Length: 485
Image (cartoon, rainbow, N blue to C red; front, side, top):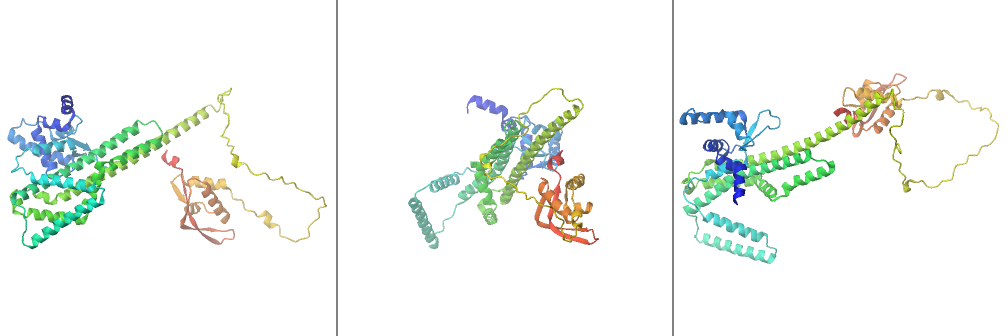
């Protein structure tokens, strides 16, 4: 808290700038009534501008037409600028209308100003009891000696049994009015403070996401190292003290029995005459639902940032692949350009056209060479009466023709099943051609053979009979590089 630090903080901190702004009363009062009081997490620009215009109209009637001369939209853009930082302006996924939300610094400044109101009394007992309870919980939770823990539990058990006996004897201790008011005020202050924590958690996630994006944009190393660093930073906030505390709080709040218990306790507290004298805000009775809503917004923010990061990495990979294809096409175009006038001299030398691997374990064992022996004898004509037509009726299936048919079919679609392909190009050699398609599916990188699903094919054989075959589902797909280009 030295002079230089405070002077720099006064210049750059949005909360400080808000408190010393010329129109601070108007800004704080409007943002409090619009966001803090009803616990609104985000609001579309058109609705927020309409509310601000109505609010400014009421102030101009009170202070004169010269007060606050700007339009509502201009004020909102000014509050959301980097020079102010009092509102966050963003576009939700799938929506072309800008939305606004309070920044954590603005909420802290408004809460600080709201604390200026004079309270009816300043209770110290409830806070002292809270301090003792927290210290006792820390001491018991960190004690490693089992005997000490058991002794403390036995002591607590004896105290509970003694209290039960006193109650059965008619001695019923009750909190007085001052104690009830003190504890209720402490509960209300803590409950409202939880809502501010959610905005700060969201801001931390957004700051982490911005840091990761900047790291990706300036990264020059390997992609594997970058992904490892990103994932480690992504896990850092979840394993931090804040992340662990938020996760435990969220799991506790998501329990239906805990929500019902909280509602019953809150209804019982508001029914007390001592609490009614404080004229408490009735919205406190449903503040746990506000916690749920704020927590869901934080959870959706984390999910949205993760999805945007994954899509950002996919785009980066696609751009890299596209750049590689551009380089390859450039080489091809230069090769075509010099095809008619090739260089007269050697312009490039390669030691080997491909790497040569010489592994010791790949050497086969010695086997003696086969020596054929020929018996000299006269060739005599056979006397067996056999049908030689089978030698002239062999079927030849052209794999090149079938490959061309697959590529032709994939020119108008991303993928095609074997059944659709056969329907478009009927089989001319029956089962032999079908087996050849199987061979192509096993060789093609973009083909899939799914044994879990079946497909039925039919064709006409040479005799005009209808043949049917049931076989696994085969799908031919266009290569990924051709789909993206």
